[in-house]
Image (cartoon, rainbow, N blue to C red):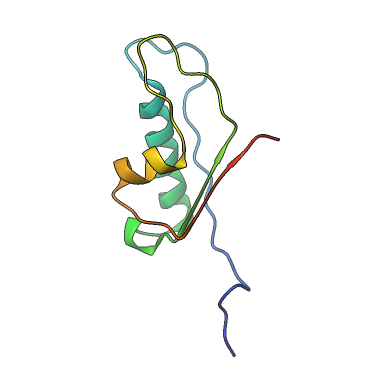
Length: 86
């Protein structure tokens, strides 16, 4: 029996909310990713998909954060990436 396209192991990562001094948008995303990877009991090498929630305009002076940028920061090459706008 093949399990390809039939199962998903997921994790959820939380971060502090609101204005947190000296934190960048990408740092929150990376912390959430690290927490989600740990929550799922995986290693970065195990990840073949990356879905992030919502797109917000970056604060002044910061770069845009999207799944492609996060994949680069995480050092992964997922075959599936998505950004849910709900």
